[in-house]
Amino acid sequence: MINKKIFSYLIIAVISFVVAFMLIGKNKPSIVVKNTTKIVTDTIRDTIPKPYAVKEIKNKIVKLAIHDTIGNIDSANVDIPITQKTYKDSSYKVVISGYDPTLDSIEIYRKTIYQIKTITKFKDRNRWNIGPVIGYGMTEKGWHPFFGIGITYNIFR
Figure: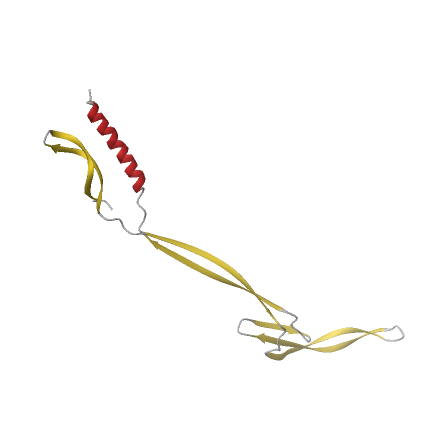
């Protein structure tokens, strides 16, 4: 049978090991990188600007119906000028064309993407530590279990 004293030392050793493992916990990585993406949509509303450039592209001949005062319907060929207008700013460029085209309104939806990179660095643990030590050692009375405070060196990082 196992001596009661040795059994009590083994129980204390196991309990101390479990408590120490729970207090120390798992090793944390020394560097943690976290990427975050944030998308923001900006709306830009502009007043109706003056055209930057106006040019006549072509003339289009269209047949139009003409009503006279007696009730007769006739048709005539009409030459319609097609123009192109360009509106330009540092944030947009708009080109419209047609017969007497006008720009009623303009809204620009800009997406801005922010990439945020967070780097967290944890302090590395020392290899040398002072703390509770449990083991089996040689004393004046022979080999006995040992429990006390000692200096340890951690060979695994």
